Amino acid sequence: MKRCKFIKKKYNEIKKCFSVPIYIYVMLLVISVILMVVQICDCKFAKDVLANIGYSLFASLIAAVFIDYGNNKLHNQKQLKEFSQLTYEHSELANDFYFSISGLYKQIYSSQPPDVSFSEMVDNILDPDYKMYNVKKQAHKECIDAIVSFLKKFCTESQNLENKLVDHIENRYSTGSYRHQLRMIKYYSEKIINLIDNGNYACASDLIIYKLFPAIAKTHPDTSEFFL
Image 1: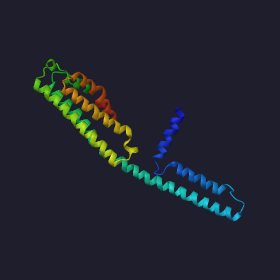
Image 2: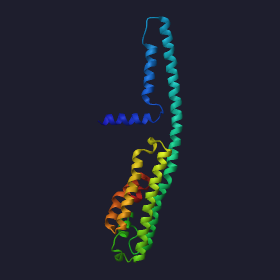
Image 3: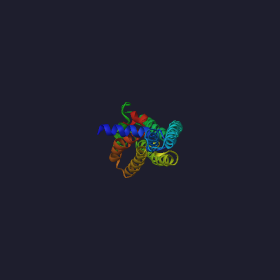
Image 4: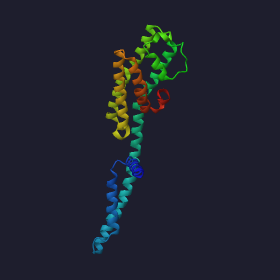
């Protein structure tokens, strides 16, 4: 089973190097070898003609493989560069979320230890008993509003990014799993906003910490130190 998975993985990696399906190259290779080696008929003239066709086909095939590989490599680099450019803003949104909320927390919840994790910060902010942290109602509302504002941005930007990836990037570069994570970020953000609007802060906190944060970290691994 592991060997089959390894072979399949390698095959998929090789497949990405060419724009033409691999089986076409294999089929042409088999035909050229047959024409060059196998004695199809008894007529010497016909055998020479077929052999020459086989050699020509083989030479053309080798040239085509190298040209296709080179062109596809350049295309891959262009697509990956464009993918990086398109996803940059969404990655920066995740960073802004961390630094803005953590900065606001340290300012308003100044009586609390400053070295708590981001998850603990969010959990404290969404604690209905905010007075135990020596925080006033207006300051607590400011923190909640800031979180909701970022959640709304995640909803909008996740949908926008998914649309851009569909329009500009081939599926094999943006991958279905990446777009799935964007949909999860949007889904969790919408659900958390609804929970907060209904005053269900405990469930909202759990959903942020155990669902939204892992989804963000998986989508943007460079932010995992903040969200995991």
